[in-house]
Amino acid sequence: MSKHLKILEFVLSSLLRRKFKNLGIVAVFSFVVFILASILFLTHAFKAESLAILEGAPELIVHKIAGGRHDLTALRYGDEIAGIPGVGRVLPRYWGYYYDVSTGANYTIMGATGSPRSTLQLVRGAFIEAGQRGVCVLGQGVAEARLTGLNGIVPIMGANGELYRFQVVGVFTDPSTLLTNDLMLIAPEDIREIFDIRPDMATDIVVQVFNPSEVANVAKKIKYRFPELRPITRTEILRTYETLFSWRSGLVILTFVGALVAFGILAWDKATGLSAEEKKEIGILKAIGWETSDILALKFWEGAVLSLVSFLTGLIAAYLHVFFFGASVFAPALKGWSVIFPEFRLRPTIDPYQIFVLIFLTVLPYIAATIVPSWKTAITDPDIVMRG
Amino acid sequence: MKSRRWVVATLAAVLTLWLGTPVFGHEPAAPGKKDRCPVCGMFVAPYPHWVAVIEFSDGSQAFFDGPKDLFRYLFEMPKYTRQKTKADVAHVYVTEFYTARLMDVAAVTFITGSDVLGPMGHELVPVAGEAHAQTFMKDHGGKRMISFEEMTPSDIPGRKR
Image 1 (tube, rainbow over the protein chains, first blue to last red):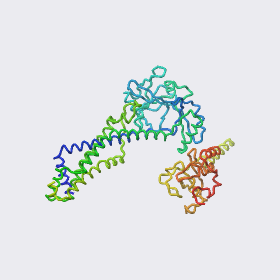
Image 2 (cartoon, chains in turn brown, cyan; image 1 turned 90 degrees about the vertical axis):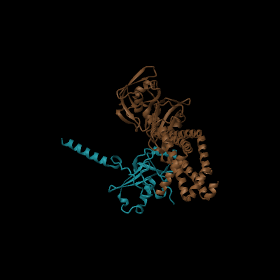
Image 3 (spheres, each protein chain N blue to C red; image 1 turned 120 degrees about the vertical axis):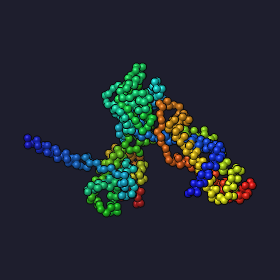
Image 4 (cartoon, each protein chain N blue to C red; image 1 turned 135 degrees about the horizontal axis):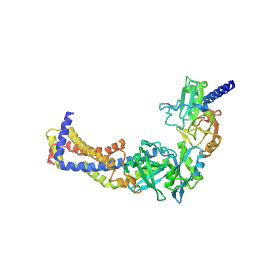
């Protein structure tokens, strides 16, 4: 062990001797790891986010389609859907988007008494009770963005051009940062007035299906009986999210293929041969009595130090980039253009599997690439090596 | 005065009896994480939509990961347990397909040959009510409807005849 420590000390001082060359390698190496890790972290965080959203989402949502676009759904459909075997509660939902000029963000406003999702957790105050009017419950992020809290007032411009004032009676959080930062609850009667929804209409209808294996069948029956309705199952939403994020992360990786190729060339260059100077160094070490195994240990430690330092630098930089700076480099490409969401920070979620994959793709090949050529040099006679 | 007391007493007695009957006031316990099916050895808890339960007269329970294994157990009890006999079986519950709730076997019919697969392949799917059973037959291509009493060992899918 102490021998390895001595070798490590030697490695560090010899790395310092060739400061600029090694710093260059570390910089390129870290950059590659940073890019790859950022993409992995970001896609993983987005996937975790969409899973968190779907956690409390209903099994089946039905809404009307008119001319290929979403339309308000008549409540009468609900009664007929409730008659399908396997269907439990059928509830209308009232919601819509609202662009808030003062914060420059799009919010989701939902009409609901009580908690519309099992995952919402109250931080302060209470949810809206049946019959209460003129009050609202905000996600914590929304409350912070609007610099308001309990008993604050949120003004909303209605469809008729009038300004409605809502008093904040509660603040909630959710495992999904998106919901916490984007959702605002008001009474169903209020939302009908603001968004001008007729009393026999709803934005969409939520259908509870007791047995998950029957969901697809219920959806099929709804589609068959009412061709004008579109049933959306939770698995469909999940699949869409998955493909979307996988496709987008693929796109970002594609743009950085250049960096990957550069890294490949760097490793290849290392693997195919040592510089004359490095060969000479190995020759001298052999001549003063180092064993082949010592030289292999030396090269192993050299590769390990370089690649681990670069790997950790890249990984930490990627973590900061994604979870503290909101992935400012790739977020535009990954989030898509159609979302003007309020500012939100992703929750740090890390998949150990991804980190192992990264190590296997970067650290291990690099160490192997540095050891092979030095082994070749180390087994030749020092005399020949030093003469070149 | 006396007659009123009588009415109250009768009412109380009827209520107790009524609540005591298995179909109404009684719900079997849900399987724990460690409960295994005595027939196939699989854990039961991951398949809440298929669980079947036998309650014995001493209050103990056996959980199954589907009606198929429940019937195997009932038809060949000596093979799977030494402590219990058929006489010890107090109540039998299965998870009804459409409501995903435990129901007494008397309340359901079992449908064979459908395209709905349980944790261990083809199943005897329990459906409550004639109308729902017909719908199920139409939707999932069932072959036969069999009640709990009519079930024979040869009706169990996936077994050599």
